[in-house]
Amino acid sequence: MVCALGAAVCFGTATVLQAIAARSAAATGPGGDVALLWRALRQWRYLAGLALDGLGFVLQILALRSVPIYAVGAALAASLAVTAVVAARLLKVRLSRVEWAAVAVVCAGLALLGLASGAEGDEEGPGWL
Image (cartoon, rainbow, N blue to C red; front, side, top):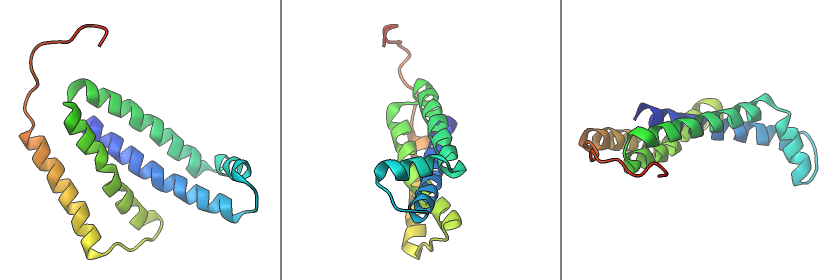
């Protein structure tokens, strides 16, 4: 479950870093989609976001090897809460009380899911699976 939550943190943080880089790239000059992409790719925040996406993918695969898929999916859905918290910090976005409550509910739901999830069956699938 640690890998799944780590993937959620990576994905949520990557989203904010890429948003910062895209805003900065859009503000530096005109141009179509390709020009904007090239300007974004030259910024460390965008590249750090891509690296975090890659790390999150690896952590997701590791989590899927040891945790039931429903638990991994729920943990990855928590990346939205991570995005909100990181955006509040880095983008100076002010979250309302309702939004903070939603973040708390997501965290509590994940904790309850983790406590309620049991062990999977002891049979293994075929090797190709």
